[in-house]
Image (cartoon, rainbow, N blue to C red):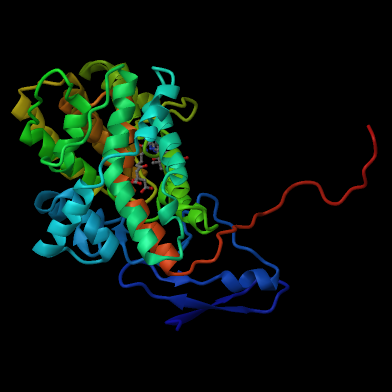
Length: 424
Ligand code: SDX
């Protein structure tokens, strides 16, 4: 039931009445779906003003720098919950009680191994293959193993697949890293929590015991939470669009991984550290800011700006605090952090960035903390994909449960009109 009505007046056409819907919070939405029947489309390149769906999972207020997961502020979740608790919240709409959390953790812990044949996939990649290419390929291939949970119309199949992906993503991510350094993959351990298990599989070896540093494990878990979900971003929209065709969930998540890889999206954390390395020292920051403002220079400050946030990305604030904690704990004096803080200070005082409302985003500090934990540069976006898997799955489930129609945008056609074929 529409809350209000809008009237579209186009010269030479009768007025068109459109329903307007009000959300719990945030902008109202004009439902333009009836326009196609009246011979007119809306055009919104990059979907800056387009709501693609109805959702109850995550709300972002870009102007105020607010991010809520099922109504809970991201900083409260990052500072009080663990990642699996946030996964449960995103998937089920409510925080788990102690019994529900224990059961959820147990299911994840007992499904972290992958089929041994999956392990052999990695041997087919070049030693220097980018881990994102391996993760994308392996996740997409999982549908050839789990025939018992591919019926997306069956809620139990969807639940099983959802839990399999959340459980196995750290194992597959760590296997990609181990392959890239020529070390044997380690089996997951059931005595470790989710983040500790991941760090163990990343940095442990068969040759000796490996003790996970609890401060690093907590920081890793917080990083997973900060990347868990973010409304209808490019990769989540990709998962929804792929899912709307009825494609199997493994293919949909692989599509999300592929979309996330781009440097304008999830690849930005890797690009930030490369950028800080190129800047090299604090006295070169002014030059970098000057280049970022130069229209003729393709250089941009990676980790700055956001399609939605026109204020501080609340995740960047939490990430910055975690960064300071980890570097202090490890006694690391990372020159990149000094350059990053100088860059942030200058950019936030510079008219260009102030006018365009370009603030540090989630990727600005994440690269520094990942480096401090020991995560190699080419694994940064894999970490993002690992955390975002819960958000992708929450949206995929919400879309399937909502019986969404296949997504099929239209266009403003500017090509040739009808013409007859003549050999040239
Ligand atoms: C993520 O959508 C999500 O929610 C994504 C994400 C998630 O959790 O899923 O939050 C994760 O992707 C974070 C963003 C990571 N990307 C980067 O840090 C790359 C650097 N940022 C930019 O490429 C850019 O800001 C985007 C891609 C993030 C946003 O692009 P928009 O919304 O299309 O904005 P725009 O490119 O049109 O920029 C608006 C203006 C432009 O100037 P004008 O043409 O208006 O004169 O701001 C300028 C841009 O040139 N600008 C920058 C800049 N970002 C934008 N100038 C210098 N440095 C930058 N980083």
